[in-house]
Length: 115
Image (tube, rainbow, N blue to C red; front, side, top):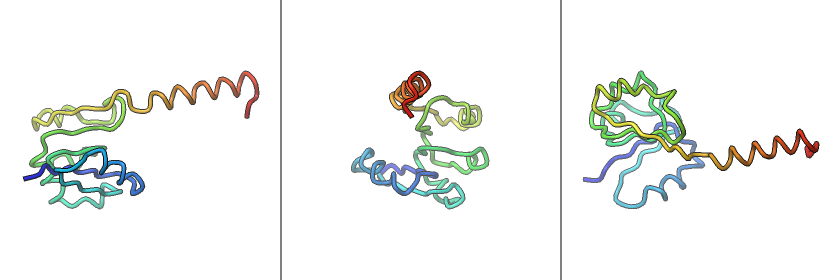
């Protein structure tokens, strides 16, 4: 049986990118809004990628991992995931180059009025 991966809040234009990143051998489910995910989808997910507001955490029955595609855990209830035995991870390098590029661009704008 293939692992079921749920993206409960992924914009539609990013679905092809996520599908390609996962590769074959997995069942993927994509929703743009948390409210569009059914209780059955929450319960059947082996993995959740993206977000999971606290009100949905208790609906996870088969979940074996939660992945936040971003930096930090400030918006993740890691205690509740921990009590359910679900490991939580993030992507610590997500967006670092883009942030650095933007910071340089802002400095150039202030220093040389580039804008």
